[in-house]
Image 1 (cartoon, rainbow, N blue to C red):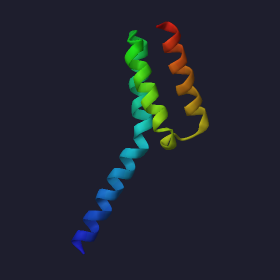
Image 2 (cartoon, helix red, strand yellow; image 1 turned 45 degrees about the vertical axis):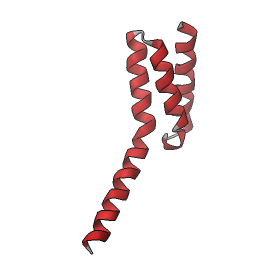
Image 3 (cartoon, helix red, strand yellow; image 1 turned 60 degrees about the vertical axis):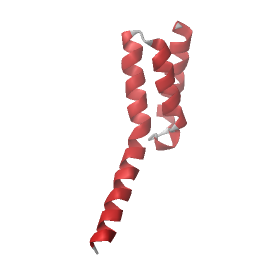
Length: 75
């Protein structure tokens, strides 16, 4: 019984982490973009887009694409 509960908790932890991947990378990209570190911000936005399945909606994906494009333009 305890092993089953442990497996469920580990699975939920992995699921919750996967849901935050897009938002984490997007937030890091925004912070770096505001500081003028456009090269690293492009990488974070690209990582966010690689995890786009964890985004809440298509609007967030569009914002990440636009933010990455603006960073590339500033380079």
